[in-house]
Length: 308
Image 1 (tube, rainbow, N blue to C red):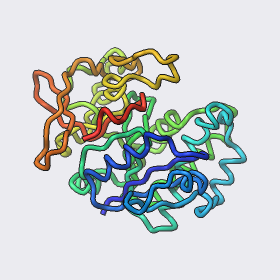
Image 2 (cartoon, rainbow, N blue to C red; image 1 turned 135 degrees about the vertical axis):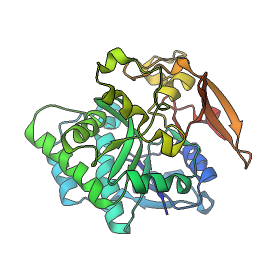
Image 3 (spheres, rainbow, N blue to C red; image 1 turned 45 degrees about the vertical axis):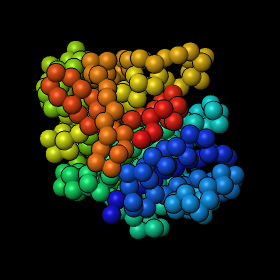
């Protein structure tokens, strides 16, 4: 049974998280976990009808490798109350939760990600083709970990130990996106593989960003045939909803094209279609067909517009 886990480190839950939680529940009947500080959980007043398994960071405590991370991490601890520190630290809490609760087949979603799939339906593909971890990459050197799969605790432990080793060996301050990309490049695809963000052979791939090696391009439609659908590594969500207004002084950025992503999301039209249970699901449409989108990463935090 797939397990969905959200993690928030900080004194208060973001208001939009409730929308992401409700959206995940709308498509999934299994366990949905929320890891957050005791203060944040108390202040949120989620109530028994939220259908969550809430666990405080304090109850999980710090593992030995988590303590090592605190000692060696050089990430910014001041920007937005430690945003860059916490985006990496979440993986240590996630590993501890998996170890304590004996969880396998964990799907970790960031708090601004809207889910449009029953993960039980997708699980056979993950079980067959992803022996350890999978995530959404938008470029060869960048993972946007809004949607992350971990088969078991051991798979995630390889990542957390890699993170500690990186900080222990250098004074650089790589963020979570660079760390996961580095983990894949040094540990191999078996440790962390890509999810399809475009259909197979997508003509919208910006090949000049990838170079002449077609193998690099195919990573971005990896296992598309098996899933029959695609995942969003933030580019579609940014195009449809704009970027976080805190980054732009409040300007309207709907239609934003992420310059880092390997494809241009404006090359698609986007439609909402009803599934067999009357739930709205996004599709990316071009001359080649219509492709179901399993998640949207709503960077603008305006999640209510994208509810099913």
